[in-house]
Length: 84
Image (cartoon, rainbow, N blue to C red):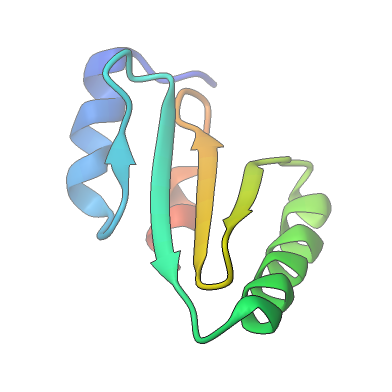
């Protein structure tokens, strides 16, 4: 079930390293990884888990060291996010 904007903002207090968009429709986490190959490996592992959950987040690699991960906040499976 989708969360209200207020619920989404409250849930953000439970997760570390994530930020919520101004309109509360998405959350983002930026990770600095060792190198480009590490970033690809990380994204592939996320892809396997996401596919199994039927969730398809936006995944971006910028340059060789930074991976940007974004997921829809409203309706996101918060219990899974808090376990990461």
